[in-house]
Image: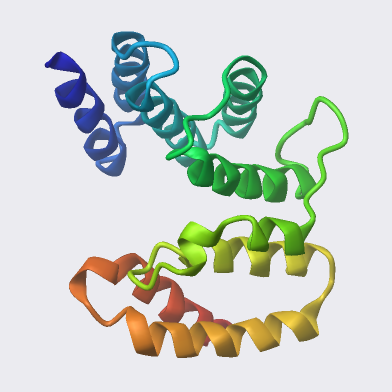
Length: 179
């Protein structure tokens, strides 16, 4: 019964800016959950997310690679692992992470292989839109970005006007300022 308390304590600590405490707490959560269980996978994902938020991009990449080499993701967590890879790929391409080898991302395959989020209309697929726009920016595909920005506007008008989708709304309003 200790695992849920410990795991749920980590993200609020991170949100408050207490990142080292959050890292410490989530390490404990990873140790409390049986290796390979859904709880262990979600705790590991949170550990990587907290590393990303603290600016420890290399640590996040090392954790991701270590996990992927030794554990097959739980089927319900696979989508989150793919999204994490998308963000890590962007950081590798930006020179913020030194990769172990050549990392590749086929954008079309990436977007098509994540049907859970593409059908989700509650704001979770905002991660896919962000990753797509960032990768296209890195590749210099600016015309495609403009097309996606219009799709983003339509998406947010239709699906993100509720309080529970505030994060997607913030991204939408900041993207308007970029155009």
